[in-house]
Image 1 (spheres, rainbow, N blue to C red):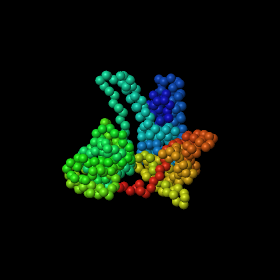
Image 2 (image 1 turned 60 degrees about the horizontal axis):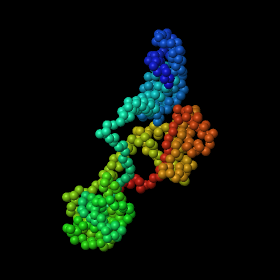
Image 3 (image 1 turned 135 degrees about the vertical axis):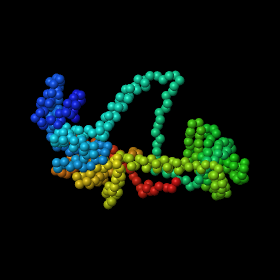
Image 4 (image 1 turned 60 degrees about the vertical axis):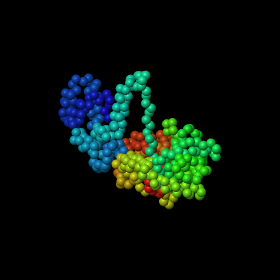
Length: 426
């Protein structure tokens, strides 16, 4: 790539590309650079000669560009380029007359190259930060307050909550009896179902998840004869604090003596659900999770590889590809377009991951390819494998990182089971 101190003369370089091997090169070059110092003329001529050197490198843009990379044959070699790079390559062949080092660098620096895009985004962020730096450092007026940072909401995939009963939005006064004490605490329901309820406390009380409380339906008892002098047993399953309000989620405990109350609740909810809204929070949450899954999965740039165990050996059986992770998939294809995941996910490596005690079983995977006599050989090593030998680590990283095919991946191992494929009805 042209050095930074010569970027200001890129116009001269572009005009001289087609004349690199021409007899008129020296004459045209002298005319274009007549007003430049001799030292700059010398550097420009050396740069042009460097760009005109024949190039034998393989072009492999898999995982490097935002585009669909396909094989491209030229002079007996198979390169991997997207449509953008092919246009630059073919136009460059007409300019340079052959595959040169300058053309190779142009193909590696197209607008949709992730490295180029990242550099431009970084430059934009730095520029914006410098422009707003003064405003951020200046104090706000006394009548203005800084707003709190907005945190992203966590969306849990596969979070499908199926309810056994319909839950109705219904507010009614109740009283809670805690730890069999004579003292009762006033509260009200926000929703009600046969198997549970969500209640709002009228005063702050320290509750314990898993504890048993007695609920007295004082509001209902003013209109109906329930015959529940001892109250109904409920288990506290969740406690939620919203602003200044405390909410408890309760689950009714099974009791044969309360069958009459169960039948009453079923009839009461069926009779009133046209008057009061049915609580569909579980459906909303399930739809939210499903919607994000449907949007995220086709656009993921990670590559899920599914591994089965056959004859006590791990065997990669399939991979989930999208338009956004095809570059990763194509990177792991050999010269015969066969996937090489069986050498990446071998027994020793997977066992080492399974032995990790952290919540996420993951590691860093270093990889590069080496082409010899038309064959493509894959070399990979994890962070833990390289740490066993300092000499091997220096050799592997030193040699591999100098290759155009050098990649660094985050490799995670997750357990799955067939039950995860089932989506309960909501």
